[in-house]
Amino acid sequence: MLSTMKIGYEWYGVVIATEILAKILTQRYWGILSDKLGDRSVMGLCNIMIVFYPFIFLFVREPFHLILIAIFSGVAWSGFDLTAFNYLLDVTPSEERHFYIAEYKVATGFAVFLGPLIGGFVSQYFSSTSFIWFSGLQIIFLISFILRGIVTAYGLPRLKEVRAKKVLPVTDVFLKAFALYPIRTMNHELIYIQKQIPNLERNVFKGLKHKIKKR
Image (cartoon, rainbow, N blue to C red; front, top):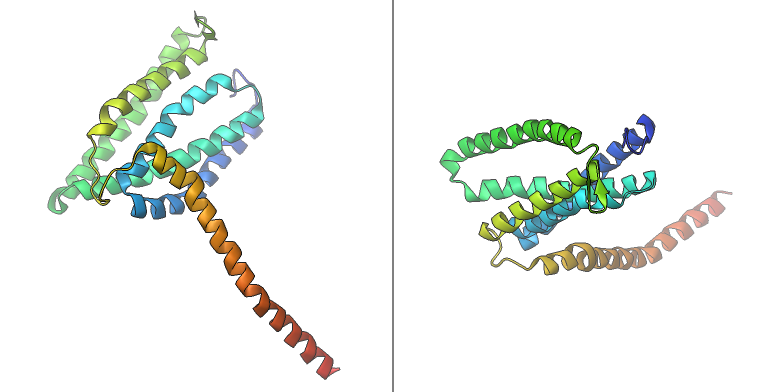
């Protein structure tokens, strides 16, 4: 963003703020969805979204694209972080749960620390390298996409759903998360507004009538 696209710190701040806002706004929705579909199902969908996150950067051309990617990232990581932690609580014995949580935090923290260091060295190595149609940092995005895909393909099928009765296919979870439930929510909101309109009209009419009497 800063070196290659030269967007400046103002745009960079907007991108970071957009991602954080997307996380805040969607976390409650993912929580409701995980209660209905199970943590593993929602985590699987968000995990697959995270796999494609670096791949999308291969096609970034304008600063506005970064805003869309930030929204995508915020939505994906919000659901994954929430359901991954909830899944950890579900699959660990209560008497030893604090040990498992501590080990999980240490492992992920170490990976978060080590990953950027390795990525920095690798990006320097590929800075003047070309591969097919890709060059420089694009190769890093491609490698990240492939590694995430391998880990997800290996690990996700081995996770068992705990709270829900069955594990739904990712396509079903995707349709429910981004089409069915949002449309239902909008319909419920519209129905609620339609029901409230007569009450609102009566209140307005009473208010006007009261003002007229005072005059």
